Length: 415
Image 1 (cartoon, rainbow, N blue to C red):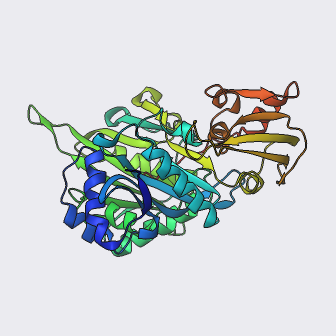
Image 2: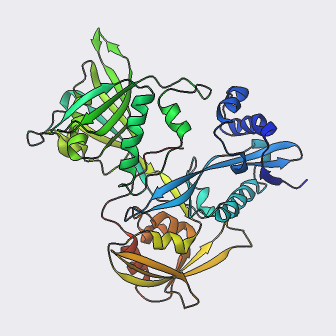
Image 3: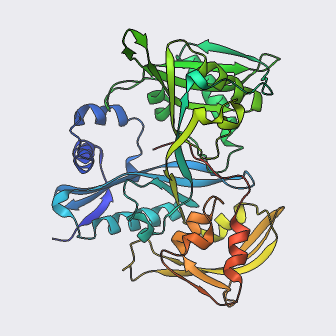
């Protein structure tokens, strides 16, 4: 029986959650999850792959905005909940799901598709490239004295993690994401869950909210954290888990870290999903007190509308190139693969990118272009996985230099 891919109806939400949780090897309360998410999910963007009446595969999306180099924001679709039942592997279901969503996203006018990959080898086949890098930072609080030259101004204040506190954090985050390439808009349901509302997915967050105020009393940074208690031989050895920290100024960044490292009973701070380019070690008198680990791919990017995507960002160098991207929505055996050829005129002041019939300087896979789009992955590396054709000597080196950025992108928002 052929697999039918379509958006689900309201009465299919519970079996959709059942299939998705099975794919992720989980056994939650499907009814409770469906009741919690029903007011927030757009079922027109919630795809099921049907084997008869059984949902054998899942994929859903939600609309977002992506900040790109130059700090413009482009419309995006955030892809999540991608699963296939273990009884239905290797039947092309994922290919059908990704192709259906890509077609729908272009119809909605979305420029990029974004996701986090549970397994690295999968999504390059469908045009996604690893575009940002994530890392875990561990801080030895006992050795985390700030360097004498670092004297941040302002003050730190604990706030209730209620609706008012959440709204303050949202305001700071939205200001911060507008100045950070790679960051995205967050949905209200994500904010609610971050602040402990909604428990169907698991235990609610129970933690603390702290804000930094500048000399005039304005909030210019915040951090959320919770603590895992531990005592050894009657001595406190508690671990502070930093859920997130965003600062609009250097003083706010340093002031928040200084506060966290000074909390009594805390000997270790762990911060996941941070940037490898974190400035934390350089604030410390003993830079070895901050250790980076678990460095790897963060958010993946697929360019749905290549001309619009390339024209939306700025470039730190000036160059004109004709790029040809091979776009496959349904995998590497997709017979409908398209070749998109674009004349890119790029500069620090802006860019134009127009479809063209001119001979290309460089042909590459769309996944490589997605990986390099935000400037954090070198194009010269991204092309290695699926090859390239250089039609003019030096074109790859020129494109590689063109897409690179001095400041690396970072996405703190997991979905």
